[in-house]
Image 1 (cartoon, rainbow, N blue to C red):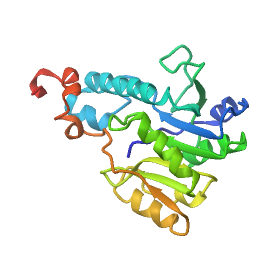
Image 2 (cartoon, one colour):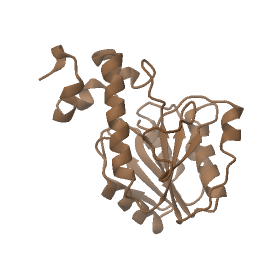
Image 3 (cartoon, rainbow, N blue to C red):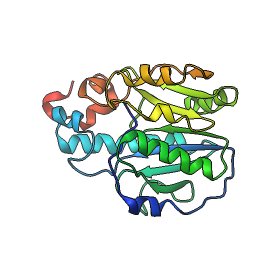
Amino acid sequence: MAILGIKNDDNARKDNDVFHYPTSKNALIIFTRNAELGKCKTRLAATVGDESALEIYKFLLRHTVDITTPLNVDKFVFYSVKKRDNDLWDETIFRKKTQYGDDLGIRMQNAFDDVFEMGYSRAIIIGSDMYDMTTNDLQNAFNKLIDSDAVVGPAKDGGYYLLGMKEVQQAVFKNKTWGTDTVLESTLADLKDKKIALLDEKNDVDYYEDIADIEVFQQFFPAELKK
């Protein structure tokens, strides 16, 4: 599953109290981990090493910036640990907040609650490690959400890489074993009485095998893994 974070504390809640006046009906929520050696893409690092995994994650972050910047929506970056200034997320484009909550589901629900309380009509959440996603994919998701209650982007690992809603559906954030292949199925079951738009299935980057044959990633691999 591509949307990840870690537990945070009450300081994050206070950090998110700043109100942002909407300039669009649409809000994009981007969940990101702070890029630190040994603390990101750990399953990938098991094969390529911590330093290569960090460089790959930084590359994926830049890709996420590139595909989200052109979108004509309000964009929010929710950091896993601490909000950063003067990083690759331009503060004139991305509004910065911090994740808070005891597990991934609660953190995502809190993020949706935060943006809906600001007055947005539609909100979509993504992670920051999807190489197999484009600006057009995101725009298509917002378009589909106009006439749907929810939009879901299925990931090949049984999770989802994108979730969008017009109002918080609390059930989708509860009773999930996050990071397993049951997440998509149980989420769709929670939304069975809603009008759902399903996007194309995509592959997120969790393991070496997910990117082993993609040329652009070869530059980051240790010599013994290069093809």
